[in-house]
Image (cartoon, rainbow, N blue to C red; front, side, top):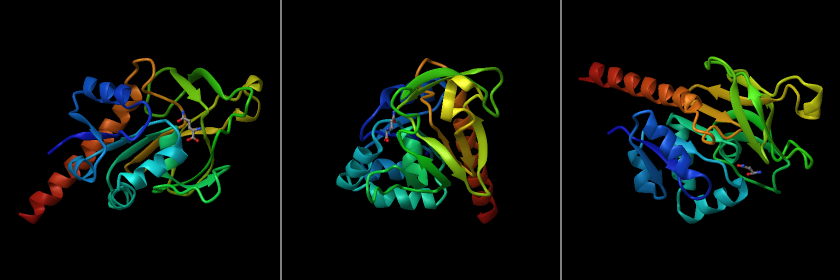
Length: 213
Ligand code: GLN
């Protein structure tokens, strides 16, 4: 059956569920392996990546998450969720593990102390008009592998200092991630991009299944 999960170990789960439901999706909180097994898309929310990975181990979700994502489950990570999906971390705690899947290197808490939280309008591929982006102790993407599409950057503005021009949204196959929090503020356009990915993956699965019959 068709439903999109929101990993509910920690973080802003409710807002993601609301955004997905507004787009007509059956959205469910995921805390157990059986719940993860039942979804065909997954949002990994913001929070604290080091805590989230520990909780994933405690709830016995770490291996199942790695397996399902390696197996092509569409997933969308925001902020700490972006870190969870990254293959490589800079400024992580020593030995910090991730679920991986996205061929990117992220820098944790990249925006630095003085501007560790800020909001501003950015442009994002696939979205018409400005998008209001909220960054909260956010990572940015230091570098991306060949198969990764850059969807958004911090505007090049001297006021943004070292953050100017940094990559803050990416897509690779059916994996998507943003440094910012699209669930804040009631604009569902970024979720819509992800829901489109999930729907495309459903359609592909249907085609393969029909061919098999
Ligand atoms: N700084 C957090 C981390 O490293 C991410 C912050 C957030 O998700 N708002 O996990």
